[in-house]
Image 1 (spheres, rainbow, N blue to C red):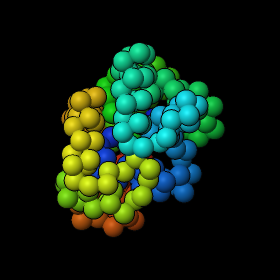
Image 2: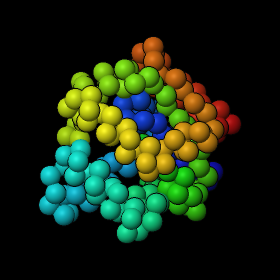
Image 3: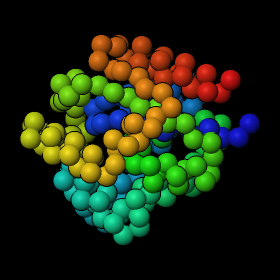
Length: 182
């Protein structure tokens, strides 16, 4: 069976990483696009703050095209022993086009209200998580600027994550992927 790349897209804090980690426990491999940017920041000795990572993401796209971050993970996908590779954090259609060159791609959008996302991010404690509402809004604006709304709009399926338990969220994603594999 050819590889299936499942691209998770959605605004920051919608639940993409939660799904990716839950699906890993079910045997799928998972690659986080943000981790690729964090690794590049480390290579450049940049502190992994939200502001630095945001600037680096924009710089990579400016220099190497809108699919630049997807280019950083292509080898990891092709080397993965798994038939299903979950990509956490696709932000643009250009990234999706890069991935379509190496395997079949399905796009799963995760939606959650602004308040839900802010509360998720407030407890996550990743180095680039916003410290307040202004930083949260600034990050949303940056994400929209790189084209995330288009990838969300073009999703093959969408999950609404406003009142779901973690188990329900992961199960809905798993059921969707199982349907795509059938």
